[in-house]
Length: 168
Image (cartoon, rainbow, N blue to C red):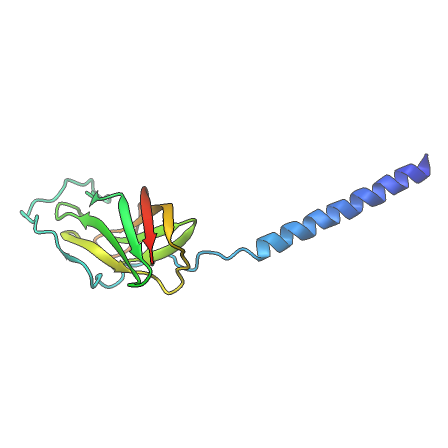
């Protein structure tokens, strides 16, 4: 009986060690997303153009808070040959905060804009050099990081589901 207990204990020890080693190997071989939104507002996005909607009116915002208004399409096309994403994303003039836009596919950021200040929009953004994609259809998201009037990252950010078509 003691031999069976010792054998069972040895077997459980080996299985536990193998499980711990496998878990540590899996965790150490994960590639974290190297692209993080900046803590402070970056330079203006060079592909941004005016929205043409500036009537001088801003949204009301509570003291110490912010107010944003977004206009976008949930359809994005990425051209691998051109190295660009075609999209429609606008930070209307009524907004009180600037933002940085990222396109994320399967947990990896493939596009990141510069600052989109109120009253600007983008229709084309370059792919990041680290983007590894194949042609096809993907579900992804716009990840939007907001920045206050002082250029500091705001506490509230948002994610918007999008459909992405990747072409050669």
